[in-house]
Every structure is written in C-alpha cells, then in structure tokens.
Image (cartoon, rainbow, N blue to C red; front, side, top):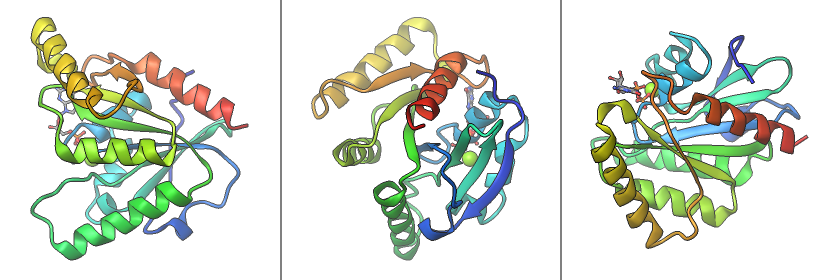
Length: 200
Ligand SMILES: Nc1nc2c(ncn2[C@@H]2O[C@H](COP(=O)(O)OP(=O)(O)O)[C@@H](O)[C@H]2O)c(=O)[nH]1
Ligand SMILES: [Mg+2]
C-alpha cells in the first residue's frame, strides 16, 4: 500500500467534532517530541502534512487526514506528558483522550510511539496499559532508530521490552522505525492496510 494523496480533513476539539463517517481510522499517539509529525510525513511521502497539526493550537486537537481512495483516516493525536503544562490543560487533554479511546467506534488500530533512545517512561507505560485494558488493538513503534548504532539500539529496545513485560505479557506487535531512513515504513503501511481491511 502507498499513501501519497493524503489530505488534511479537520481538527476536532472533542469527540463530537470527529468526522461522521463509516470509514475506519488509525490513531498515532506518543509523548511530545517522540517523532510523530516526522513519522506521519514519512508515511505519507509529504514534507509538510503534519505541519498542519503543529500550527499553534492544533497540537491539542485530534487532527484528521484522509487516505484515498476511500480507505480511511489517519488521526494525529495530541502528545502526552508535558510536565510543565497547567492542571487545567492536563485535565482537558485527559478528557479528550479518554473520550476518544472509549467512545470512538471507527477506531480500528492505534500506534503508540516510543523513543528508541531513552528508557520506558512511566507515562508511556500508563498509557499502554490503559489502552490494552480497554481492549483497543495497538502496536508499538520505536522511533528514531537511526540515532543509535545497531548494538546499543538492540540493547535499549530489549530493556524497554523487558520493563514493559513486567506489566504486559505477551507484548503487542513492535515495529522499529526511522523517519530519516524510512525504516519500518512498509510494516506500518501493511498494519494500516490490515486495520482498514479488517474493519470493513
Ligand atoms: N534522527 C532522527 N530524528 C528524528 C526522527 N523523527 C523525528 N526526529 C527529530 O525529533 C524532533 C521531534 O520530532 P517531531 O516529529 O516534531 O516530534 P513530535 O513532537 O512527536 O511531532 C525533531 O527535531 C525531529 O527532527 C528520526 O526518525 N530520526
Ligand atoms: Mg508533532
């Protein structure tokens, strides 16, 4: 599957504002700076697609992109884990994310992005376990794998997986990715295609 004609649809501030459509969708979520915008651009062969969602204000919305021909939507979710934000901001974020994942019927699959260079963060663990508990299908994408050499990369990912395994067994699908080199692109596109196909 190729996704190159992707276009921006809308930004939703709440569940009610999401597109009314029978089309399936796959969601992308992770800590801010994990590489989500870069990954969406890489997947869609665009330099600027996810710029739409990094415009001021748009980072706190659910940003919808349409994948033609009538296949489904990609949803760029707000980044979690800004320690510096206000409580009011965190509450609004939590409400949005909770209502989306508990209420969105079209959601076929979620990609949770994890930085391959750092250790598993509590906020990642909390989110993964919460989503698994909801019974929402998901995969883990290890981002920025070009930033480490092969051996340290393998070691760090093994450590993340071991830490996660203490709470979550068996682990969900994992895909190594790099927006710089295109690593993981075909696997992610295959997972998107499968998710779109399965929900038809
Ligand atoms: N080396 C490398 N850097 C990356 C990669 N993906 C993202 N980055 C860098 O990480 C930073 C955050 O990326 P961005 O896509 O904006 O993250 P977001 O906040 O999750 O949308 C930027 O400086 C990117 O250039 C990658 O695959 N490899
Ligand atoms: Mg971004």
